[in-house]
Image (tube, rainbow, N blue to C red; front, side, top):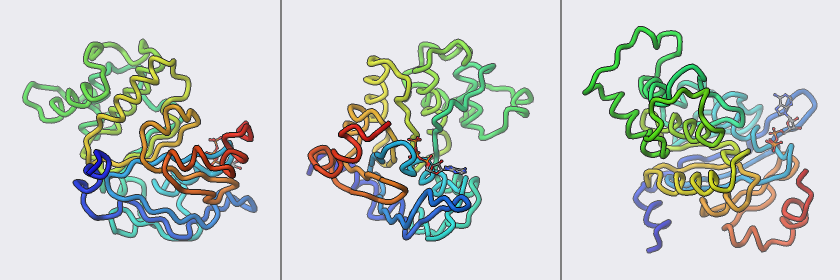
Length: 260
Ligand SMILES: Nc1ncnc2c1ncn2[C@@H]1O[C@H](COP(=O)(O)OP(=O)(O)OP(=O)(O)O)[C@@H](O)[C@H]1O
């Protein structure tokens, strides 16, 4: 059995995500049109598509930031279509954003500790960390998972861009995630930082599946086993990284320069 097949079989037989006929309108604009996607537990998938194809809207529908205007979404078998964002987070769904969401005034370790405690920034000053605190232990594990041990006490404001993105991934690992949505994690990264990102994603715990939106195909196609291509808000094609790279239609609408 291949490493990928083994990882997915260990994650269990459930589907992590099932989208059926999901649409999202903004007034007259159809940002997402009748999208049906199934992602198995433990599966790692890329969503590709030109600017405006509907990729971020897809994430917003899955997280509940902008719930669908039609269709159903199941997360590990449970219908979450109408659930608020925090209830999906409680069920193990996580997300990183295109725009940095970290707090510049905290240290790296404190940011991860705060994420592990699941508290808001305003309450943070009332918390005293102590050795043996399970959240501190969890924060150190997250720190290690995203290769930031050597700068645990550095202020977030002083981090390089790539290190900030690694921190965001670390924060998404807080509190037993089962599935993570990564929104363009390689954007703005140097070649060295991209290689590090590939290593970090590849070393995530086996049961954690994800969807990655990523314009850099050298990153996207190396960290997934399946690909969904979107076009004009609709599902255009699904396949393995090899199938998608070799597909003439995909070449035409996306890889061949249609992407702006
Ligand atoms: N909150 C919103 N209000 C109005 N229109 C929106 C909103 N969010 C997205 N759209 C529109 O929906 C369409 C799809 O946008 P979306 O951001 O999902 O595309 P994308 O594939 O993520 O693009 P990119 O690669 O540029 O991030 C676009 O026409 C966009 O302008």
